[in-house]
Length: 323
Length: 258
Image (cartoon, chains in turn brown, yellow):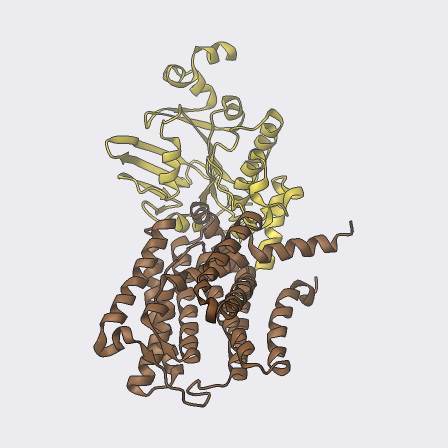
């Protein structure tokens, strides 16, 4: 199979995203595109731990928040570039991710998931109470300073920046599917005992995967904060956000490279559409978004448990077989 | 198989044993699952372990392969004390095992399952895939290489356990009831496979309940009962041992054998 045939879905999505700013100038539309790509990249980051290593976290907002706060605080308190903030966020998230990854060797399944929630909630309390340093629950407005070094960019530039990140994460997961490390990690996910019998240091691989996942999440946290321009502790450390990372990947297809992006396209555009149509007079209905979210999740788990990526692979295989 | 360094088979009396258990004891709370078991396995041996359910056979495998740390005693493999080392490190030294309750990587193909075993030794996925394909053919899994492991019937899953372990090119392989639940045809195929591996120089320890198979395979048999080694000898010696008959085989076996 050729490269194009194998990755036609990715070509369609990323190629489409690359062409959109040339064809469309509507700021609202481009804004949605940036969010689709960023949420997709965040789910891809979650996917490294949850999908490829089988360590399902519901606390990844912790790393997102670390990335967001690192850049915002360095920028506003010390007048440093958000790129430096991104690096600091990655360093902190590597440390926190290694700690959480180590926990995954002690706590299995739901206990691990619960401990990740607890971790993100602890960070929420610190960020919202430590007024002197983080401005507490008021949050931090990130000033817009035009230029690439300060990440003060227009919509078009943001689309391409988010696209580059999305492509890098997608490429990383393709590597995970075809490399020695990825195969062995899949062994650990499927059965830890059997993996160890084959000489695989299962615990070390899990820690590496969770740590990688944390750092990737942190990078997007920084970008998101710079893009949106405001860091609210109750949002960046929220369980809602952690659940979003996980659900996009589950709906799109856990442990697949394109899945998180498919999930993000579906969920982010649904959310944006519903928010827009149900605003104003009908604003009482905005919560209906959550109901739709739930219904989509139930349908996917019931009918395509392998996610949208699995569904498209199935349809593709059927189309290629002459009936 | 057995082409790696140190895999040269020397069964001469002077050669050091490949595996030595020295008074190994494993307790769970008040229960002693394995009590002061000592045994030696020379390179090229095929040792059988028999015993009633709960005799401590699988626990002994867990201790040897690094899944349980023994409370007392030592495990020496190839001249090195491996007591309490993690399972993955022991596997890398050339001692691996299969599981009584099979543990396939269910969502992966048979080929990928075996390839992960080969990737322990080789860095290149291409080479690992080629080696895995050869092992799959050896184990008669060729027609199923592309199938998801979880869809395999039990007999083939048991073969997959063996194939995956073989892909690591062990020098000592522990087989935990790989024949249980097989029909007569499948049983003969498995016995043939084990014989072939042994003939090629692989050292094996086999846990099995099927005495007929054990009689045809093992050079020596160890009998465990309540965690203790109560007999050891050739298949013939074992089946005529009074304690073994009383604890495990029963009078019917003696009559049928006569």
